[in-house]
Image (cartoon, rainbow, N blue to C red):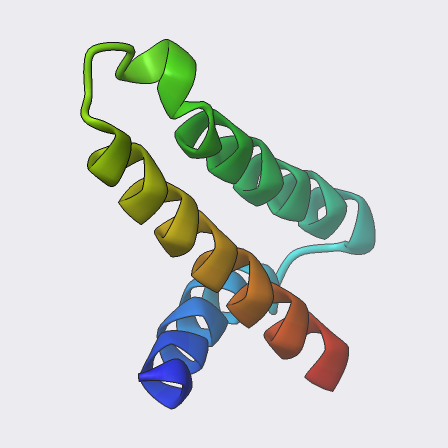
Length: 75
């Protein structure tokens, strides 16, 4: 699954970023990080969700973070 997730994140990050000048690429990557930060805050976005859902969302965000770091470190 890690390879599949890395491939998906790579396609998402790099497909949009390959043609962008450096300042726009930095802004795009910042937006990616901001979106993950928002999803990470389930205490605010889903305050009535179960603890199990909060943990699951944290695991998804952690996996996306790790995949993004892996992809960006490669390039």
